[in-house]
Amino acid sequence: MLSGGGGWMTGTYDQTTNTLYWGTANPAPDYDLARRPGDNLYTSGVIALDPDSGALKSFFQEVPHDSWDFDGAVGEFVMLDRGGQRYVVHPNKGGDISAEDQCGSPDRATEARYQFPL
Image 1 (cartoon, rainbow, N blue to C red):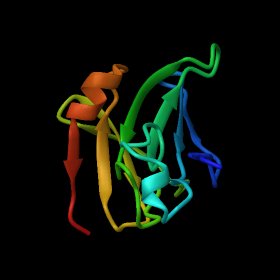
Image 2 (cartoon, rainbow, N blue to C red):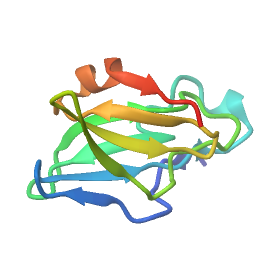
Image 3 (tube, helix red, strand yellow):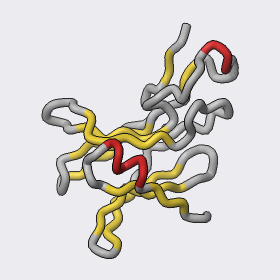
């Protein structure tokens, strides 16, 4: 069976932007990569949802085609204002910390990723 991408921990609600952020788990099966080709979109990353409609506001896939179980299921998020721009800061199990621009566009959020060393 192919599945995955669920949430292991609760998400975070940002009342300023009325957005629910949720870290997503790895795709399944974890290590049988031949059975799940491609990036396995929306897994091992962060999704942003409109809590009123359930619509996808944006997403960022931290580990495309995750074969190491480095999913984005860590539940902690930090909202950061820097230089007049709002960011969502999120760690993953691979040791990366990403900051995603809160612009509300899936395409833009994917392009606006920054890595911060631990």
